Image 1: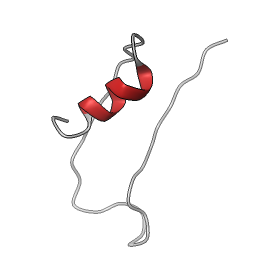
Image 2 (image 1 turned 30 degrees about the vertical axis):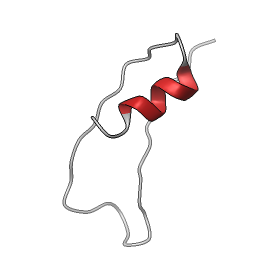
Image 3 (image 1 turned 90 degrees about the vertical axis):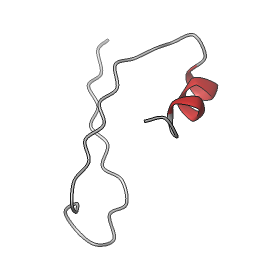
Image 4 (image 1 turned 60 degrees about the vertical axis):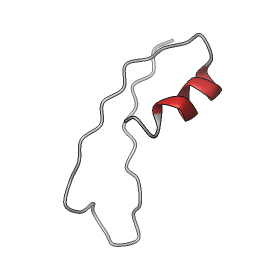
Length: 42
């Protein structure tokens, strides 16, 4: 999280959404580099 927090802050500016990071041994496939889960509210 220490590496990604400054990047997120640059794009999100004053918006500070909740963020969860979980380390895993592998994702669904070898080609998958990142998995993103999101919840949107209108």
